[in-house]
Amino acid sequence: MTTTLNVIAAILTIGFGLFGFLAPNFTAASLDLAPTDSNMGLSEIRASVGGLFVVTGLAVLWLNNPMAYAMLGIVYAGAALGRFVSVILDNPPLVKAVTFGGIELVLALWLILANLNRAA
Image 1 (cartoon, rainbow, N blue to C red):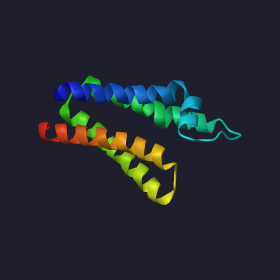
Image 2 (image 1 turned 180 degrees about the vertical axis):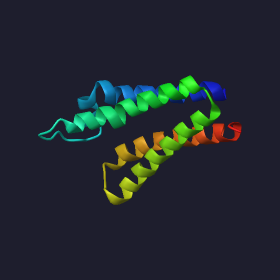
Image 3 (image 1 turned 45 degrees about the vertical axis):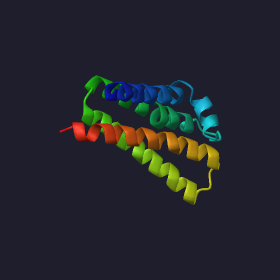
């Protein structure tokens, strides 16, 4: 069961990343990001919300190692931390921020707790 949930988490990571990588305008709108006079924002979305997640998810599947899955969890923990700090400091739309942060937190907890002790 651990292996199946790990693979699902990695595939979700790739799926989340594909939205940013292939549909940066859709992703920007979903994240309430406004366009500017530059296309640099689209480049940033393709890189940080897209390619980073696609390649990380693929690498975790390729490595297929408990430590790799735990590190993916640590990545999600960092995202959740940033999201919840933003709720306190930036006043984003609460439901959206807590929903995204909650998904990141659940993935972080699962991946870390299910894999860190197996990574010896």
